[in-house]
Length: 68
Image 1 (cartoon, one colour):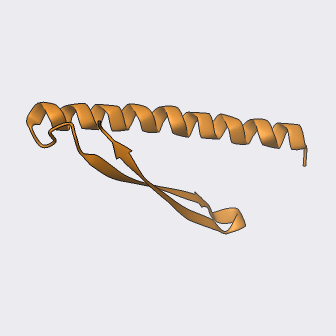
Image 2 (image 1 turned 90 degrees about the vertical axis):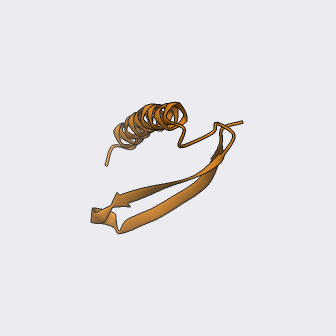
């Protein structure tokens, strides 16, 4: 295994996950506020599930996202 390649590929994957997740959350929150489903002062519970079946990883990462 090439450590440099492996590290670069992990960073690339995590960047893609981060950017995509942020866009989706922002879009959904804006739509929910516009429709009145959210007031804009909530804390939202978020969960991300990371799966890498080949090495037996299945991990849930939970946190709150405050809108104010």
